[in-house]
Image (cartoon, rainbow, N blue to C red):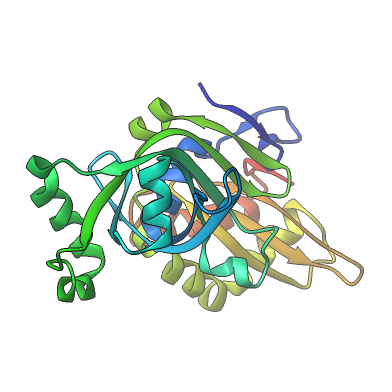
Length: 268
């Protein structure tokens, strides 16, 4: 089991638990959605010091990162001396809100992929990095894989925890992962009145603007502004969703519940 603090979820005003994907699921989804991270290796030149590198990565069938790196690169030389490393993965929105955005650090041993597994790893890597086909055949390049030992996930302020290798590998990528960015953009532009209705009823009657900041199969995070402050919370879908149509239908259902004076499961 993972050890965590998850203050963004929790009981609503009636004491019911507000469901949210586990840290393992959120970490797996974040790593799946991104393609580049910051790899930290242990320096051979300055023993014991960390050495950071920008690192594109692919994923094997367990969600473990694979790298195509040159023996001439400093990080490769470091790994050949000591395979222990970490990979920090952040989403694009971290440029705007670096401390509020989710991020994950994968820790493990990075070693050369055995020859008998190289074809499979090559295929999964080139699927995410097609341009690498121009140098994948160079003699000094080879595939390395991180055997994950442990993961540390931060979901934003007050939401963080360690994730075990077993939990991470067993976790599934959220079914909305590939569509979430477009869906969030669409909800914030086309469903602004519904989101504001939810914010005013569930959180603060003076809310002036409400936006979805994160979306998954179980619900979404809503941020809303008032004349004096900004706050937010999580709203739960009536049932898990799996595609765009179900998201829109569930949001409409939530609005109907509010208009009918029925309770909506939320945590603010």
